[in-house]
Every structure is written in C-alpha cells, then in structure tokens.
Length: 83
Image (tube, rainbow, N blue to C red; front, side, top):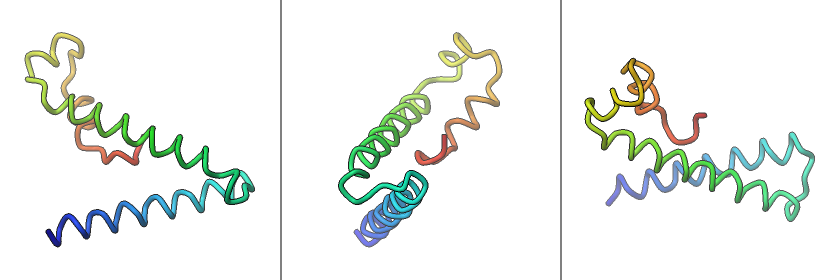
C-alpha cells in the first residue's frame, strides 16, 4: 500500500511540474491551461496503454511487424511521460 501511495504522489508531482512548464511556456492562466492538462493526461494514458500492450506481445508476434527487437525493447522500457 505504501508503494502505491508513493507512486501516486510521484505521478501527482509529475503532473503538477509538467502543468507549470506548459503554463509558463504558453503563458496560460489557470483556466486556459485546463485543456492543455487534459490533453497531456490523455497522451500519457495512450502511451501507457500502448506500451503495456507492446509488452504483452510475444517476440514472434513483434517480429511480424518489426524486424529489429532493439527498438521495441527501448520503447517498452520508456516511462509513460517520455515520448
């Protein structure tokens, strides 16, 4: 339970830090930044799901669409907040 809580706090801190960077870069006020935050969270969710699905594939299935496994392995290891 403590690990889950720590991960939750880490994710919340990451969202807050990213929000601050976006708001500063785009010079957005709090209400104008809300769509940017939702877009960021949506993108992170898509990446997390995609990488989870990629990890669930067998090496043989991956070889059907990607001849080199190094790119796939690199993508699998990336955290969701990295493009």
